[in-house]
Length: 196
Image (cartoon, rainbow, N blue to C red):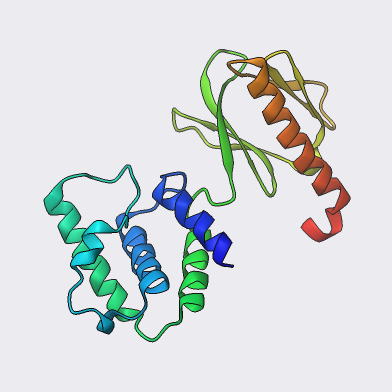
C-alpha cells in the first residue's frame, strides 16, 4: 500500500495524472495527513510552504500558491484522527477517480499524418484526436494481433479486412508500444473470464 501510494503521489505531482484544483487540494490534504499526522500537533503550518503539495505544472505565482497552501491546511484539519495508512488508502481511492488513471498514452500519427494520442487501458486501445473528436476504442476482443513494422504499429482487427496503422518517431518507440500492447492483449486473452 505504502509503495503504491508513493507511486501514485509521484504521478500526480509530476503531472502525469491531471487533477482539478479541488481534487489537488483534497489530495494534498490527505498527503499531509499521511506524511505528517494530525493537524493539531503543529503550532504553525508554515512548513507546508517547503513541502511539494501541487503538480509541477500548476501556477508558480506566490500569491496563488499561498492561497492554495492555506486551503490545504484547512483540508488537513478535516482529516485529523485518521491514521497514516487510512490517509494513504483515501489518497489512492481519490487518485483512482482522476481522469486518465490507468491509461498510458503515446503521441503518434495516423495514416493521414495527423497528430493523435494512442493509448492503452484495461478495456483495450483508444485513440484521442487533439482536435477534440470523440475517442475511438478498440476493445481487446476486437483485436486479433498487434505488431510493428519499422516505425509503424499495426492493429489487425477481427471481423474487419483492414488493419489500423499508426506511425511513431522511430523504431524503438514502435517496438516498445507494440510489445506493451501485445503483452496486455495476451494477458486479456489468458484472463478473459476474470476481466469481463
